[in-house]
Image (cartoon, rainbow, N blue to C red; front, side, top):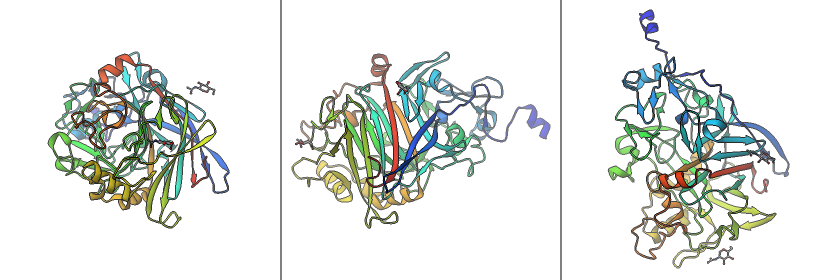
Length: 451
Ligand SMILES: *[C@@H]1O[C@H](CO)[C@@H](O)[C@H](O)[C@H]1NC(C)=O
Ligand SMILES: *[C@@H]1O[C@H](CO)[C@@H](O)[C@H](O)[C@H]1NC(C)=O
């Protein structure tokens, strides 16, 4: 029997391929202490598995364009056992370069075999492990340059509750694990992941009509997500999103909360989140080119996770934002909308009030609110850096008027100054292929220790 299996070239799991060597770009960051001293940590980043070449024991594609090979991938497990996840040429294929404490993600990269759009990378502690952050009663700081990001793009920095080993320990099929960027999940329960819990997501796979690299399978991968920074040069928001399941969770059917099945609020995650976007909250002159926080220049972004008792063990009560630019500390803008208490941070009361006033479903509260977010932060979360364009709604939820058919002046619908016709991936990819985002000088420590 063994020789029969061997003849078919069957492995026992998804394996690491050796066609392309994998050299994780280094990215140093600083761990700070309450005394104000910071020490440099030698981290590195890894490209998500979804961007990688997946092939058989030779060089035949398991996944080509946006379709699975029917020979190599007749079912999830056989597919994983037949296939190899390969190394990445970070700069040549994906437009990812790092340099000391700075990381640049390019938008469109013409490689020798394919055209790559955007990327998603994770901060690692060592070869097989993602860096885990415990954010409660701490602050997370970084500098970002969004000057080269037009309407429709999103240079994002956020945390998700992935497994530190990329799922390798729990799911033997997921053998490449964190070393090859496996195990992603977020609060949108994405269906476009090629592998979830080590199994290929081949069942019901539908190539995405408008995206030649992507498709959607039966399963989604869900987990709590803390969006520290979603932005381009025109708009920015920070947003907690929670899920009712602990850790990474593979969803199927209603629990994925698919919008196109009208089940957005029936799933296990809060897809809307509770966002703080200065423009949406009444201050249109705070963030943007030449404004108070000037998106034409690098800006340092501080996010603080305040607890009820000033201890790491306390309940999460508030998520605060501070900016530093040109040596000046800039406090966050205050909300400025009639009917909304004037505040400059995210609290449970702010979420309740703003959702009520804007007529938004309060799924954040329904799924557990700050208590659920605090619990996830106690478990620890993984840092994600990405650059993407939006095949569902052209990023209008971030930088334009959305929903686009909202009554003129409807509260909470104006999120940024971009036109409702902007942000279509085909437009931004052809008009701004050289767009990029640069993240640098990541620092983590107790409150007020990093800036
Ligand atoms: C690397 O650092 C140098 C010096 O600070 C800078 O000029 C260059 O643009 C950086 N390159 C990248 C890719 O970040
Ligand atoms: C926007 O924020 C700035 C800085 O906090 C403030 O000076 C200005 O008055 C605010 N504008 C509005 C409309 O709230």
